Length: 462
Image (cartoon, rainbow, N blue to C red; front, side, top):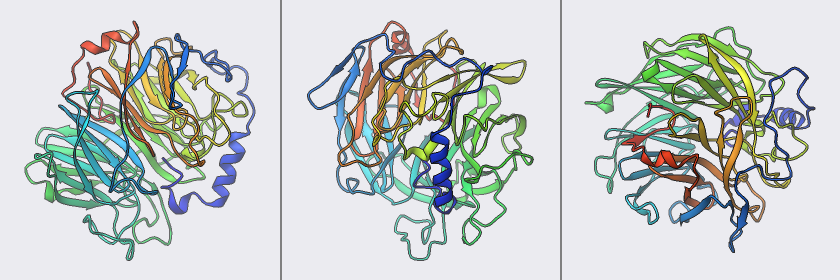
C-alpha cells in the first residue's frame, strides 16, 4: 500500500499526477493483447452468487471462515496487512502489531497470540524461529514501546516465535527510509533480507538523500540480535526515477533459480542473485504509458514468466471502473525468453467497482497447480480474484470473492490473498481474516501440494 506510507513523497502534486493517470486514454495500437473482458460483467467460468451478508462469490468459491478484528487491533488505524505461514500457523501483520493463528483446522482458525508493536506497515515474514516486521514510518526507537515523539528510527524488527503463544522481541536494524516491504534470501546459517523502501525525504533524520535502491541486512541465525546492514546496492544506477519516489516497493526472490524481480518506483528490474549480497541487473523494464507504481512481482513455477502489478492510485483510488484503461492498475504478464522479459498481455478484474471503492492490483501468490500458471490476488475492495495466465496473452479470471462497498466509504478491502495447503487466506484491512476454498477442475490439483511454510516474497518450486 502506498497512499499511507510514502509520507512526504506523495505530495499533493503527486496525487494530481495519479488522478491524471486514471483518466488516460486506451493503449496505443501494436501493444500486446489484453485479456478479452468487459468491465460490466464477470468473465469467470462460474456464475456469481450473493450471500445475506453482502458477500458475492463465483459459484466455485466459498467462504469457510471469517474472524473479525479484535482488541487491541480493532481501532480506526489498526490496518491489517500482509500474511506469512509456517506449519499449522498463520502470521498476520497489522499497523498495531501482529497476530498468530492456529490454522490446523482451516475452517476453524483460532488466535494464538496478538503482539502489540505499532509500526507502519508491519509487513511480516517468518523463517525458522524468527519473525521479521517492516517499519516504514519514523518512531522514537526500535522497541515496541516506541512513540512518535522523536521520530528518529525506522527499519526492521526481529522476534523469536519459537513459542507461538509468547513471541519475544530480540532486536532491530535501522535502515535508510525504513522498510516498506522486505524479502528473505536464506543462505545456510545466514538469512539475508532485502529491504525495499521509498525515498528520499531531504528534511528527514531517517531518510536523507541520496536514497540507495535497496539495502541488504544480514541476520546470523545463531545470533539474530547482531543483525546489520551489509550492503546498499544501487541495482540500477541509470534508472528513470518516478515522480513519486526512488527506491523499490517490493522484491520477489526465487533463490533456487538464482533470480529476483524488483518492482520499483518507475521500473521493473530482473536480477541475478547468485551472490545474494551482490545482485546483478539482468534487465530493466520501463512502461511510462501503462504503469504508475510497479508494486510487486511473481514468477511462475518454472521461472519462465513474471507477473508485475501496477498499484495505480496507491491503493486509495477507485481504478477498477470503466473510466480507467484495463492496462492501468492491472497486471502485466511477461515471458522470459532467452534471458529477457517480453511483454505478452494484461489482466484486470472484469467486475466494475463503484466510484467510492478503492480497487487496484495488490498482493497475490501462485496456486500450485503443476503445468498451469494460476494466481490468487487481492484487489482491495475489488475483493479476491483467481486467474489463469497459462496463456500469457489471454489471461482470464476463473473465480472471485468480494464484499460490497464499505460503509462509510474508506480505504478497505483485501490487502493480501494467498493460497496455502488447500485454502485461500485473505487479510482484509478492516474486516479481519477470511478463509476461502475454491473447488474447480483447474485448481483442484493444488490440493495435493503440501507446503511446510510460505512467504510470498521468497518463492520455492513445487
